[in-house]
Length: 343
Image (cartoon, one colour):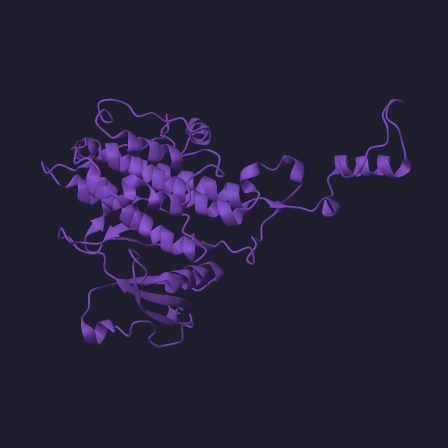
């Protein structure tokens, strides 16, 4: 059972690991208390201790610089970011089988979240960290600042728009927030297998109109030489994750049951170009991360901004005019029959 999330002033919570007396390695994170911060900490607290998820060790509520805040003590992820770890491998080959094992670890964390009806919605390289610099270091997911419950009993409180102009992908955010996580898995997997992202900006902006179009249309390639030796199973899995229609996108259960994930021991040990590309293009890596961050932010806006308004509650002038015509039996141009307000 998950312990209740009730931070108290000066009261230690969680695993009772007080850094002052136990000397355990830990990291401090301070958030000024507000609804968003409370949601972040509550959801992270709820999944803390799950597989491949950074643990919250202790939680305090206190005053910091004159403001009420939450002080979160988490395990220290000394191994650094996922792709930084690959960059420093030097001449040591990074293989497709290793990529499969990494994706299985990330998928395990996402499966745990989705089974608890929580979508992370911010899966990106800097949120995937190792707890140790040793080869035995464990990869874990952190930063729940954009995490959200996906239960139907927790509807989004967002602006309302008339349903005629709503894209299909926003009809049911409880599902599509999870699909955003699956898209992110596809991008991470793509980069792992070649060293560069599937989508990019041509203008130098974090996310250009052209990049948005490519994302929405699913325009990406598997160019040579980087993809020449990558297995067809891996490419097929990426295609399933980067589907433009969230209805067609792979679920986390399907992902974890895919042979490339659950049978990693038979995945080819073919050396990849990833380390070389990440090293040669290291000065562009910050830009790549910024582009992915912007793309995720765009998705969150797409999924959150629209809440379907009931037709009866709509104040759209054109719709109201149609209602009035139907109610009075008015005909248009002497040839059109009365129009139903439900058309």
